[in-house]
Length: 481
Ligand SMILES: C[S@@+](CC[C@H](N)C(=O)[O-])C[C@H]1O[C@@H](n2cnc3c(N)ncnc32)[C@H](O)[C@@H]1O
Image: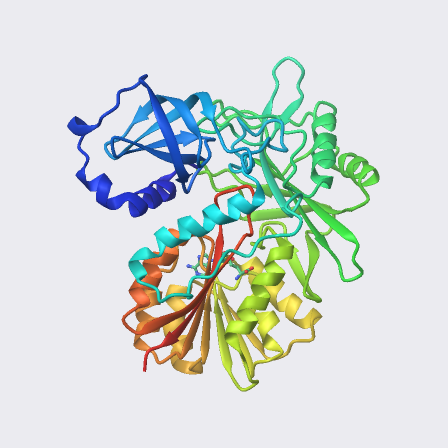
């Protein structure tokens, strides 16, 4: 996903310089090798240097690198380049990546920086993202990192290919800037049980005639292998395996599920999710349970949450606990407040705030997530809740009108809030908003839109995604009276 969001980010960070450049004034050419000093990390898989003031983005480079870089692509506002010679670097933080395939794999981007440097670079990026907001000193905090930065991901979704000669499956991440699939056998950022379960599916594929779906040829069956993990209330590990497929029929599925579950007793359920869409959305609407259950449990701060195969859940449970603590602190509830958790997913934020509120409300467009939220609320003996199924932009006006919440929590997807949601918030007298987001570009946009009526009191970045450029932010806004 070198992507529009990354380009937005580049544009945002470098808008003054970028606006000046024209195709004629670009000082480099394709294939040219230039001497370059790298200044900082970019909001993608590259790092940034400037050649005659022109931005050059270099894959897998690091701040302080002095390199010979070959220009590989040109845009009006920046060029991309690859390292042909790493002449000098700072070995106090530029390190050998833990993962052997780091240089090609598109899964993560910053493993060549030690963790302290990763956090420092995230702080720098955030400063530039939020620079237009003219924050008062001390409002933007430093990123809260993790103690253990490995094996933190509780979810993996690998696309697959079939190797023609052997019938074996390849499953893994795509190479950067490519649709070539890497057969990932070991991934140090995700739950380490995932590697062996995926290997079992690879091993069993020829026996059960499991072939990868080829969209161009319209042949084959399996699109993605998805795994999620969690810990139930007793602390036992639970894993859910979902095969995303194009038809729900599977021959000998009983035997297949028995083999997988016998080998991996942690697997509590195996599902088929049918997806015939031609988009790159991973899951389709229908999920069938082949064996066990269609959900697993995860425990956060002593609360238990049901997570269905395709529902949203934070990918880093340890940091999610810290996120909930920050939200709790920002909310500062006294017990008589009404709280709206917009984009509530499986109700994690609403349920964790419920004990200190008079009432919590949630809005979520995915019906399955609403069912999970209702289930989890009851499991946690929460009774003061109402979860509503629908789009926030369609429901928020009436909810604000009817319930007059004291606090609105916003946790939208990467695209940020719909404009109508911001407009409704500006029109009602909500005292406090807590906005949590995994995308600083859309967050900065929405904070700017809220700025006529809301003052940003605090922004707490949180590293949910070590070794990647991504970063979560939790923002406290208070209405200007
Ligand atoms: C970043 S997740 C946050 C979920 C939840 N707050 C949590 O922490 O687990 C965003 C959620 O918003 C939902 N969503 C996306 N667009 C929506 C919309 N327009 N209206 C309602 N829900 C939406 C997604 O299905 C997803 O569950």
